[in-house]
Image (cartoon, rainbow, N blue to C red; front, side, top):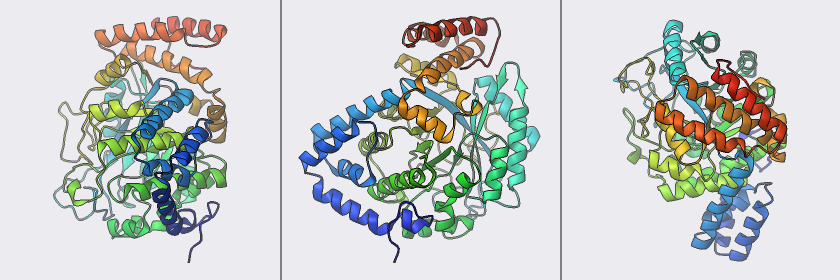
Length: 473
């Protein structure tokens, strides 16, 4: 019998089934305990977060007045740590060869009618140039798990290729990596290659459900997959991103497991996850989301995001183009700090004029161009940021978290967001987006607290207008 221990290195002890079940029972028993709910909301205002058990009580609570307080508090906390900045990125799919049998993914090995494709280094160059011409500076590379077609050497070569390409004023300044769980040695190689964040979705924390959904392939090993972030940390990667695929199992179970994983990383390594992603099961080739009976309503999805923000206030949160523009607009204010824009989820999709669908991992619900997404964000009061300065200045891991928790990161991030937005406006934006953006920048300069930083940013913005690039604090 496994016992719950957040500091254990065994998956079934730090994500303990009995502890989650007891947590859900406790939440059900206290969901109408409004005195406790109010105390937890008051505690969360201290910006220190909540435990998985405390947060589960709030998730179970259905009192409309308290739920609204949760939304308001999430918005306040998000502004406190991340201001009104939204970091922009795009996924880049390198290969859909995969040896796993995941029941929810069209890349599964038994799917014989999806064409298999792996980008050559020359094709990767074309994809990267297309992404640079859109204005992207940050990528998340994706590949199926296949030791023959997608070995670690292929991933490393691809990262080297991506960083090497300078086209006009374009450059990819940070590559995040979303590939299968691997060894400490391979994580060291990824660190040496200069990656940003290593991202791996748990899919589901429910072991029995996990094993049913992953019947074959290396990913079927629940413990090896769940313990991957510890190996990544051991390999020197101090920025890791976690997430579950909501809809595969019961959302309350996943929510508790997700927070327990964050607590484990903080307890063992002194730093929690750099990001948490919140994807939902969506239609794709060979995949019908109605086959999974744990689908999540938009209303509950918003509540989940708000409570993740309240529970781990320092952690970045990511929403992808899986979600519609309407859902993204609702959910951004509740805690999201990073979104993708102009995304294509097919292998080799960016270099094509028309969006290809035959190798997509999932249907894209937000089909707007990057310029349209940037324009929309600015119209709704956000600063689209293309900044990658923290990675390059060594503000990662516990250093980033200490700056973030103290609020000092704002002194760098706000000015850097404005400077990278200015780059985008000068080099890539439509006339309408440029006009909106320049007005936004002028307004936001006044929100920089220190006069000397304010003046420095004005000087840097003038340099950007005359051709200087990649300026940051």
